[in-house]
Image 1 (cartoon, rainbow, N blue to C red):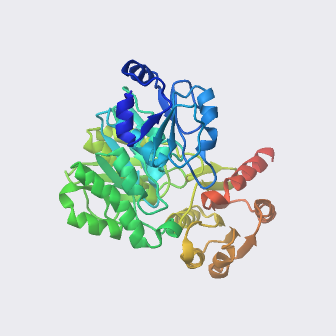
Image 2 (image 1 turned 45 degrees about the vertical axis):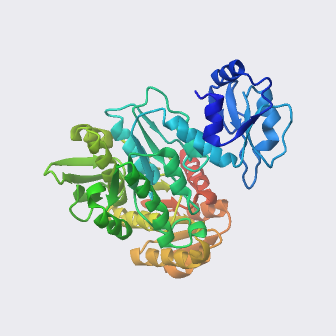
Image 3 (image 1 turned 180 degrees about the vertical axis):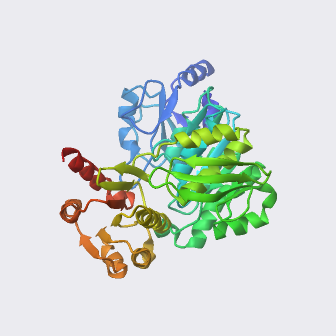
Length: 468
């Protein structure tokens, strides 16, 4: 995989406790390396253990455990205490070394990598892109929440000779994170789904969010790659106008390289539209995901797949077969109650999009509309204002009932002016009141930030209706 000399060069580190250190030993030790890990619970014989530090953990406390479990050596920081008899690669910054090792490993695979980021929809777009590319290639895609400075390297270390492409999701809640992830991944094509008010606690303002996401574009341009731009986002359109020759554009409102017309919500079954391209091609599409915002996500995936030669007919079939993951706009039919499970995460833009969908479909089907919403986290000093805006949006859409949960619940409720507005401090209280007021013919949205654990409400409602 790597020689010991290469590892020292990659990490700018120095080996300690390899005794003896003659060349034959170096070759043998390097040959023993089978992988890299940051978790001693899953470490295997032949792995290298990288001791990372975080706010609530320090891997340096598990070095001996890693050694006992079969680690060839451990990557540790200079300033950290360590056992003197355990072979270590000593570096200045273990997290940087972790990323540098992943980057060096990625370079062994001469394959295109698609990087996906954005304030909303990046996980769905990642899944859609991987599904479409899989019609032609063996694709590695980001799993779970492995989209940060620790998780992305984990994904890159899963590359093998079978993979012909990879789709890597990039998240950010602090300045410089996308820039660093881009340096590690070295993508040939980048997607930014949109720029919105997310992670403002770490990024402070929308302009900072834009600058953070745009770091992906700058890195892709260095490799003379392509960038997928949603022209419907004002921040991204400005950037696209300055870099036209490097962009693949998408839109649900105007002409672009790939754009949608005649968008129709097919109740809770999905969304239909006519896909049109700048090359005068068009094809009817049925997307088995609901909402106009999902069409925008799909267009980004279509642009990438088309760029890499996936036939439009295969794209159409793959979109028809897409199944939403749990917690990401999943539709659940509970008989008299139809449930929209969008509990995976939330920020102001995604919350508004979900509420618009709730209102539109409710009116179309003649259903009572109910929003069960938890706090949107990490919004910094704009949190109260942004939650108040959600309340105003609910009032504008004339949603029938609102159950609000969290510290900012009052900001939503005092602005929503609905038939019923409730502030709740426990999931169980929401469930009890909802069941008490329940009427047949109800469409209910459950949504909130990851930390609010709104999926507990969905699980409880599903169990309740199963019993009944």
